[in-house]
Image (cartoon, rainbow, N blue to C red; front, side, top):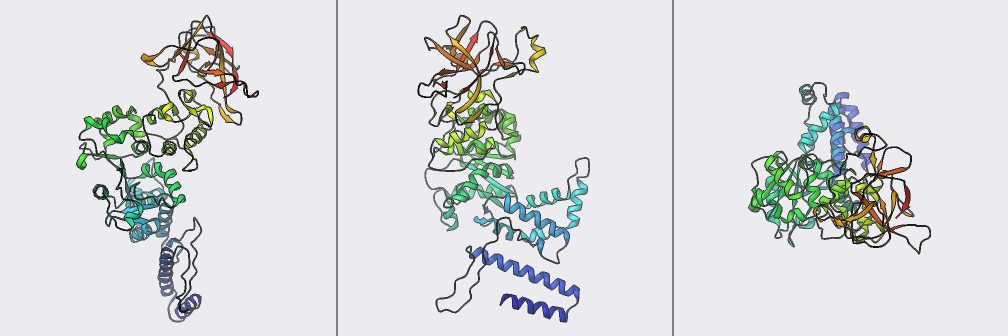
Length: 535
């Protein structure tokens, strides 16, 4: 019936109107048709309307479009090329970069991506070629943006959203279904205050982790966890509510600084605004990441350098340092201590609640595949149940003393001559079926020229390990690819306490658990062939 009706309209148009009039009418008809189809798909997500029990009525079968299908008006005939470009970038941005659900601040209701497209559709259609050209002319120069970049900036400017960072209440945080059903639990006032602050920054959209994730859908939950760092990074501003703080001076005592998820919420955004008890601003700046006093206070409270607070770059560089930032933080669910670090290290891993401590083991596996820093072995305490070579959690990582980079004069030449050529440790360690494959410099103790120490800083002292033992130094110096490592005299070299496994003839060594980091110090320069071990 639908096809007959459409054919009839086209026949009437062709017999009564000019070509230009036909094109205008057809464009409006196709636009109306697409809007109706979108509405049906929104109301009937399973793609069909069942007939009435009487047998009368209609039955429409409209399965949802495949993932990635472009349903925007940029395919509709009769639209100017400029509008087609805008709508194409607009649809791509909403479908692939916006959070799955957002809060429409004006009405304080949840909206899906398709609803966002409808709300802002008219504004996108109003973008003109003159407006695009004007922005391009204003940015003319050596780094002038392309037309597509200008359109994207216009789109994101109209769709800017705020994110929320806060410590969850024991109970009463508004959930996804609470907001859907307009229910107002105890934490609803905090939600309203957040929306008001977001509106003050010109954001008509907002995102809060308490109510913008449909946890009943495992697919949507996994997408949210894996994308959360990016959503905070792309937000116009992150509103941070520190309920226990009254001033900048008591920031370090706020529970917000002890939670695992708030670490990425602190590092990811480019702009943040901190509010304390009673929603009073803790500074006079509009962006606290550009406020010197706030950055100093945050750095003291977190031990994170100011440059990292302001310009953090995710990835697998400086893994040990980032793990130290996370080592004092906790999460309610065991798995979340791994999941909340996915974005910080920019790695990909499946979300599987119920796996317990294994989640952190899988995170470490993913990091090791892309990391070549010996400092990743600077941990002590409880090992993972899946591998004695990997820690159970970030709490196992220990502080390292400042590394002495200068080398003593030896048969290899002066320190300055070799400092640029030298590197430390195995940069190609990898997880294998046999365990962590790692090149170490083996030293048997006791030795007349070497002593074993444990601890760090003021707590460092001679090790209590007595009798004969074997250690594998992981941060030896290398000056060439000869396969030999060098221990410099009077330097502390991180090492692993090794023991043989009598039950596995293929694994010569295993890492022994220690409560503190172990260091080897020698009186003379030691040069030895490196040994491959599987831990």
